[in-house]
Image 1: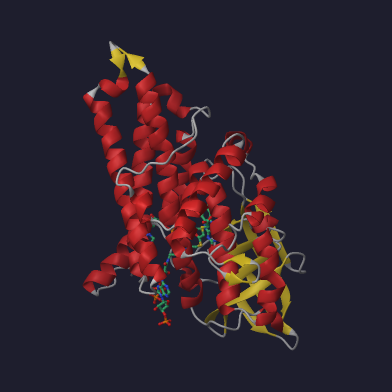
Image 2: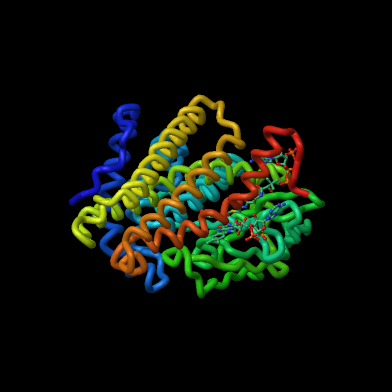
Amino acid sequence: MAFRGVDYYEIGELLSDEEKLVQSTVRSFVEERVLPDIARHYEAGTFPESLIGELGQLGLLGAFIDGYGCAGMGPVAYGLILQELERGDSGLRSFCSVQGSLVMFPIHSFGSEEQREKWLPRLARGEAIGCFGLTEPDFGSNPGGMLTRAQRTKDGFVLNGTKRWITNGDVADVAVVWAKLDGMVRGFLVEKGTPGFSARRIHGKFSLRASVTSELFLEDCLVPETALLPGVEGLRGPLTCLNSARYGIAWGAIGAAMACYECALGYAMDRRQFSRPIAGYQLVQHKLVEMLTEITKAQLLCLRLGRLKESGRLRHTQVSLAKRNNVVQALHIARMARDILGANGITYEYPVARHLLNLESVYTYEGTHDIHTLILGQDITGISAFE
Ligand code: TGC
Ligand code: FAD
């Protein structure tokens, strides 16, 4: 039976007609095009590349950008897209988060007109893929310490450094690379094939297996003057992109949680142990109720976040609260669902273990759970506990 959503508080009523249409369109896309094949991709450790063009045709790449061939949707519609995609798999949502929030967003917000015209229409159609290189082997939670350096030359800049854990790194046509120029963090657009730029796939992941993760190497990599993103200086640049991506993750985590809840509820109704379906036992009902409660709270949090973003009042610390809460709750929900499924919970036949393992990465990337605790702690006390 087709998925009808989890909406205990009739939150759908608070959506505009456009938002409802976007949600139902992406939901059908996930049902028809993603779910039939995603477990096979996960097992094989491959990203479903054939879907990239379709994501572009549906306007889901950089959907929140106006112009340059992008769909110009509002923040709630963007959130709903990521929620539905992550009900399919976090890897698919990751692809859209990186392409939209971490590549198209900085080109749109900080790029020159020439950079926007060159890249945004192709990235929107899915004809080009982008990646975002901030994290380094020795600098994850503290990107401000990055070792990657840019030096001016007479023709442009020479880049040196290594980036690690980069989604889409070795399949990207353009990498947004953050490097220090004269001690200041700056963004550079490094094109595939540039001499001195190479990428290597990271294998052996338990999590996000249907997503490409790579290492980037910049070895005396010469890029032209036009590679520099002119519109931003300092760590504020990459962190502003992260706000957009974290916003999407807060929504996306609800999708993974809904998939786990729906699966656990259906399983509990069918599975008989002792005298009746396990859904009839109080301990199982308690877990199902916990799941539904946390999904409902997360939905309300996101809708409010989206409306604040729409009105231009959203603070990045509010995004941290939602990313932190929704991902950890989705992880708890996935664990409870796995428990309800018993031995079947560890198989590929059900989506639960796949979501559970994916969420382990989501918990860590885009600012770990604890980094968001510290961001919020600093906001409410005025005291930094990072150092
Ligand atoms: P700090 O001194 O606090 O700030 C430096 C400058 O940045 C400004 N700022 C922000 N601006 C916009 N948005 C934010 N969220 C901002 N947070 C801080 C700040 O005002 C300051 O500006 P200025 O103009 O005064 O210079 O910086 P810090 O070095 O102490 O670090 C702060 C900290 C720890 C919160 C930050 O570094 C952080 O968020 N760390 C976590 C790193 C992270 O999230 N990495 C993610 C990498 S990308 C990724 O994971 C993609 S996953 C892909 C997928 O979805 O598949
Ligand atoms: P660390 O920073 O070493 O943290 C390890 C532990 O220490 C964590 O529990 C953390 O919370 C804790 N910790 C760190 N500092 C403190 C402190 N001050 N106080 C208390 N506890 C602390 N990065 C990109 O740039 N681009 C990408 O596209 C990208 N994609 C990714 C895809 C995947 C699948 C994964 C797993 C990661 C990806 N990342 C990407 C990297 C991701 O952003 C980092 O993994 C993340 O920022 C954490 O950095 P780290 O792994 O180095 O952990």
